[in-house]
Length: 157
Figure 1: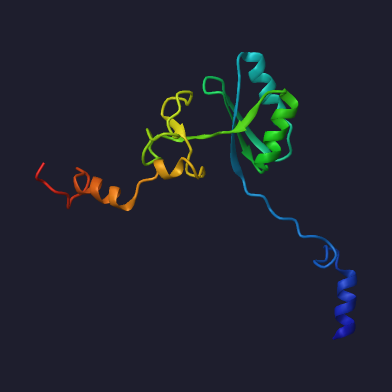
Figure 2: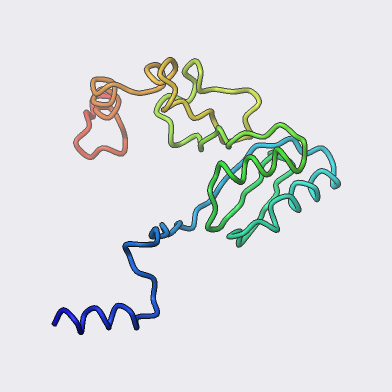
């Protein structure tokens, strides 16, 4: 069957796995970027900078929070570089997480006065601030022992 296999490979119209690189499929993801938006012109400029990008399916601009949300099959770093290049503004990935996600939202390093209401700085990946913002197992056990949501909690209080 060696000859038949050889002929079937020659007649096959699809790309062979040996000669061409396999393209990695990108997953749809949400990219959130913090960029300063002062007026409607800035909002339009930021929106148009990413609307024409390949793979972008949805663009949302929130001028009150200075936030750009891009949904689609895109690379976060490419979106960030495109916003920086096209608008000429300083842009960073969204550094905030909802208040409920962090164990100690008022720990040094996580609380930020510039954060929008209901958000704190994401310090889980910062080695200096994460030790202060992360609860230890002893703290978790102690706080849940007196919690109203715990059915086995102490009722002395």
